[in-house]
Image (tube, rainbow, N blue to C red; front, top):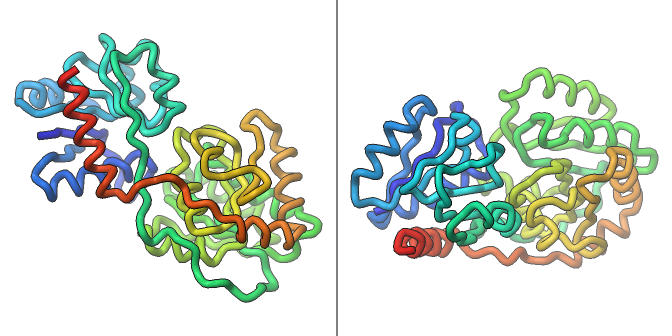
Length: 314
């Protein structure tokens, strides 16, 4: 039995990490192999103590380190979507499930063993039917609307794109976390038509991606980049910062364009202007779609369960 502990989250809040855990836990529960428990940070120590007193494999989301400012205790498996901010982040070297290779590399020295179990890919994320040429460029960004995801940079760039012509900017993701930032984005995007769609189920996200001419990710710090992987699977060209595992499924100059994460905002804006101003580039990138090397979520859940068992034995 696997007990997966994650911090309680605000109602409606969605992130790649929380989605990963939900997808895994739903399948483990259906097989009678696991359970997901949301724990208030103040109850974390008591919840871990109670869980480790059972015969279950206790898997703890590394986000608890950020939420509690305390190290993870011995006797658990750490699930890390990124390297924890606190150092040291564990009371002793722990077995780790990392959701990306960059995270695995970052924590290897402080772990006793690391297994990489990447996210899965829903079947709905696939290329859609060819769309007729549109008068307006349609650009999609996916992620919580907040400073870390960089939607303001995208809005400002689109508002000043000299050759792009009229644009529709579609933002998919929670817009309640940073309301002041959302208002900044709305003001900056005024020359464009802005669509704030909120949090959508995967099938509707896939439809939005299939309708888009470009997916833009302006986050400089992704542990994996699930939304970008889903965009690539839909065949939509991607412009993104080269962070996390994004360079493994967005090949610069082929199915999209990458900008170094250390590059200034102006460099990202210039590249966005260049791409939107050249419809032939967009068409070639769509024709060169690359399917990300991700398994279905059912297979990922099985791999996750095997990793838990192997790590416990070690």
